[in-house]
Image (cartoon, rainbow, N blue to C red; front, side, top):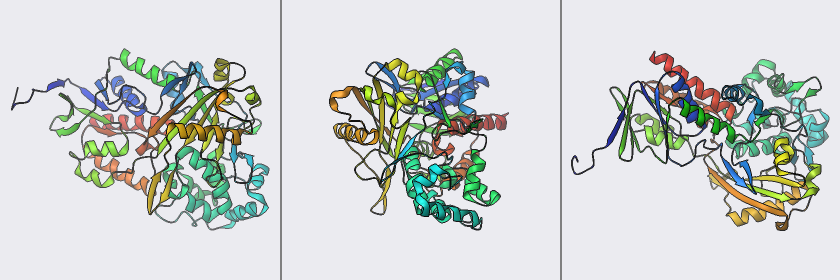
Length: 487
């Protein structure tokens, strides 16, 4: 006892590293550190590993409860999967493509690449969505000066699209995709964070359409031409949650100490590195990786780096996922391909997206069996309200009722409570980083401040950008850069 309090249990080793957060970025960081020879401890406040790459069992099927695919615009996730022995599990979705529900009717989502922005406004699928007048307005982009939409220091997705291609492209193509991917209105999102390099592409190639085409080239095309919308992704047989299981197994083989149910309360910079307090236990280490959401990361570090307090980001939106396993052979025909995104102004539909998982992944269709289908509907957008932003929240029973109604409308097949074999609701609070306008500049400031502290890396989607591909690549790069600087 010291001063009436129990003497804390101090863990020290050298060279030692502590990773705070056991989501995908924390696990990847721990692996990088372990491969570099460090003795690594990972502290995770919850009892589950992987963060938003989670799993749940519904009707006896082990399903992804969060991320269920990864973007193939880079090889980051595929490379990691191969390193973990999962190369033979990498699978492409069925080629049926995705749809978009517009206020008037549903359309196949055009073969465009970046946030629903068309590379060719006169592509037949694009023209069907925009109409003749909308396609003409979008074509004006080709003759506009490259400076329009690209000259200011920061700009939103909607400002760029509206200025260059007009309102119909924004409302009928971009808003559904942005809402489905980022759970936010495009007017609130920093285009440089959610579509890196796009504005630079406009300046280089002369138009937004040309910039989109340049980003698409080679990323999802083949001998038959451009891939269907929604197909520039891949998954893992058994679900993305198998990546987490493989990571955890790999870390244990490397001797990494994985401690679940242990929340880091304090972080203090010391002459020799860092001291992390977690309850009655204190961990001393030369390297520290903070792999938490933005508000939590700033809250933990601001005692040691007070300037970070002014850079605390807003929490990400609350997203609710309703998963229904239904016995409904009428869905065998996959009426809306792999799924459907919903334009925000569509009346009578609360969901922002529906994924027909058994239509998207052959392995899951095989596991579920004939006539059994897995539907996942996503709810929750960040919207402007009363001068700020608010999350739209529903309770579980209301969500189920909405999911049945929305699925019936979106799939054109009646889906009733009697068809449900099992269902579940999973809520993700802050799992999707909210890249508000100006966020790229704030990220640069955060990184600059953290670089002044020896042995510190801060990783996660709030800095890397949304999506597994961005998070995995950035985490590996940040840990490697800090290791090189310490060498």
